[in-house]
Image 1 (cartoon, helix red, strand yellow):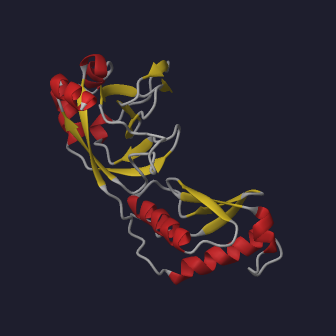
Image 2: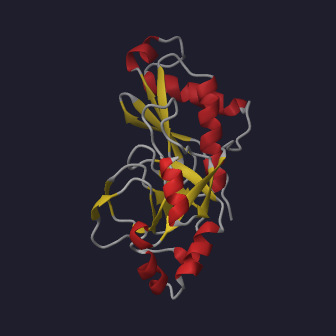
Length: 239
């Protein structure tokens, strides 16, 4: 049974505080985090810098000098910001529902692109085609961006694909690799070490620092994986 979102504020550092909306990974908490994040960005306080949303929390970064000199009531930065954020939360001027986009990600499964696909299928006593069907039959939700720039943690994967990380991480996983770790699936936006079970690869670029929005995905987005063959992969990669 889903629990109602909470609103607890904690001191993190002299430049950041964290708002906790609950303690479970759930879509209704993602809606609460995303909704309040949008509201705060619409109505920022003096000294606001940026926010970092996560599964159940929103961390707010600020300039302590500007906040301490602001007209917000309170004796210190934490008290000033706690009061401001609490009052803002009570306004509820926008919907708490996350307003993300749906992004289709083409994936070439197996072979050199998915070195762990056959082993993962055998572990679950499934055929390779069954794994691909299960992986592509779900609409995933982006819960947070982390680990490396542009890495989206996706929730909603079929429980029959739940697989632990590899005992020994690989020293280098290519950008675009699609993997599974525990109850989540995700796409590596950059080449990096990692221990996820790699089942395929996308030709799409998940992170581009030259673009206004560097990350293709953001918290609240929906993701659909679409299987493609090697020829289609090469066409998209060079297109």
